[in-house]
Amino acid sequence: MHPIVELAKKSVETYVREGRTIEPPEPIPSELAEKAGVFVCLKKHGQLRGCIGTFMPLCESIGTETIINAISAATKDYRFHPVEQDELEELTYSVDVLSCPEKVNDIAELDPRKYGIIVVSGQRKGLLLPDLEGVDTIDEQLRITKMKAGILPHEEVEIYRFEVKRYK
Image (cartoon, rainbow, N blue to C red):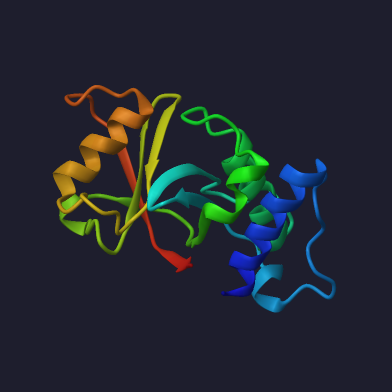
C-alpha cells in the first residue's frame, strides 16, 4: 500500500475509533510536503462509501490535505451515513492528487479517461474525477458534472480540466 493511502486509512481508523485527528508523519516525506488538491474515496465491497476532496489546496501540505479529506469522506459525505467502527476492516481507499486546473476552450481538449473536469456557472461548481467506471464519453462526463453542480443541461459553463495521480 502506498504511504499516502496508508495515511488516509490511518486517519479514518484513528478518527472513527478514538475521535481524534492524527498529524502528518515527521519528517514529512517530500511527496506529501507539496501543496495540491486531494480527493479521498472510500469503497466497501467495491461500492462507493464516501468521497470528498479539494480541487485547490486548503492546507499546508498534501499530507494534511489527505488527513482532513479522508476523515471528511468517512464522516461528512452527505450521500452516506458516517462510517462506523465495524465497517473499518471492509473499506478500501484511493487517494487522487490533483494537478492545477486549466481552462478548456474547446471540449475536444477533454478526455474522460485522462482528465477530470470542473464546471462552473456563477456560484455553482461541480467536479468529476477522471477514469471512472461507466464514464466513457465527454458528453457523459459533462452531463454528470453539471448534474452534481445543479446546473441544467442547456446552461453554458466554464470548463476546467485537471489530471490526477491516483494511489490505491
